Image (cartoon, rainbow, N blue to C red; front, side, top):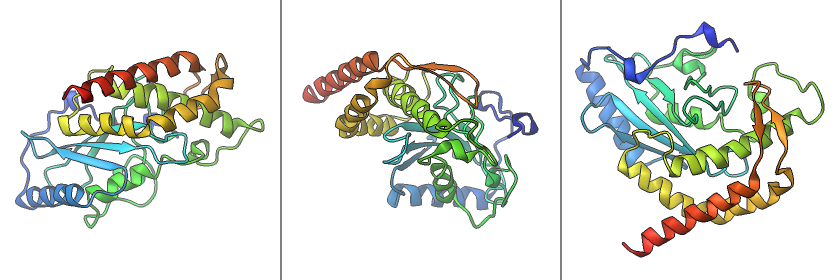
Length: 256
């Protein structure tokens, strides 16, 4: 996948004038209401209180995948003529631009799917909505993400399994701990922060189960086949961090 083929969207440098059409205004409100009243499993979204064009979305990694229990955060901006054109989307759970979580989710925040115009294939249709877009993004968080890359093959047996191990570790370290602590100082609406905190407690035993299952990999060094960067597994430190976060959150909840 050629990352240079597509242009990036940087919310911090977006200078597009805000001039929503009446149709766009009503559709965004309707889409947000649908997400609020009937959210798909594992998907949560909040509209910006000062600018209707911006939407903040949280996708919790599906069970049975390397993304399980991770908090994957996205910023969306609807164009002035929405839904004639798709929103712009930025993936923000990247450890400050250091981690590529998926062949389709780049460390610079790019989300490569055809309905966003960032990859070849079926284009966006005005019949689609924010819910269908987020469900499509959620579908990228698969059981074997190595094969999300078109035409990719294992050079040596076990490449796909090793990549899943990398994703699991990064999910626990960055998409769970990093998001609970908001290490990168992201703008996360209070409602989504509360969902992250409560979900962490709900998933805690499963997190610990995964860590114990992977503890034999402590000290291993793997090369990420897509970013070509080394990932060092430190499961002992990770387990201690989870325990500390859980103790802190439990204490906060007991004093409120």
